[in-house]
Image (cartoon, rainbow, N blue to C red; front, top):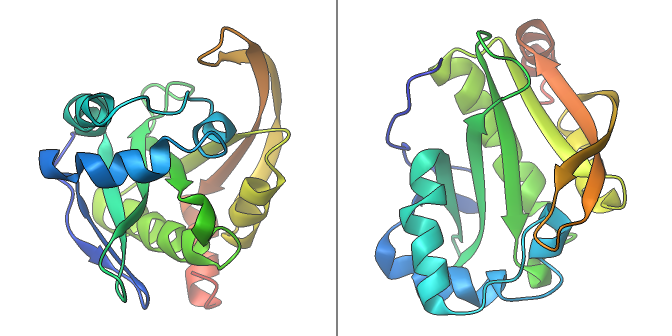
Length: 189
């Protein structure tokens, strides 16, 4: 089991990543209420600021989850986090997950944030494996995952029950410590 810690502030060229605060609930709601955002990650759109606040206080506290803030405007545009990898008990492995406000899709921002969190996971947390899963229909997320250097392992069928009760397949990808080291030395990460 990997010890949970407070998230450290991280930075990229265009983004700041920091822990969530209760006062961030209106900004979380602003993008998480969009019906095109949550369902791509398997969660229902937020229905109220109070619901967003509860997510911050529960779900985001259970894992290492950062608010993604664009430096130019200073507003929260998404979230990215590392949570328990339930497929690999006893292995130093965490699962990467993320969501981004729709208006920021297609600008390379999530790839930028993901590369920074991947480095954090291997360098600071000392992971041996990082895993990520995405829906078969989420082609944009698959592109981000592949740009970051994850290797496709396969599709798990009927494994993920989403908010509406539908059970979906997920595409699974991993990055091993030695793959991370090679990508870092090659300048990819």
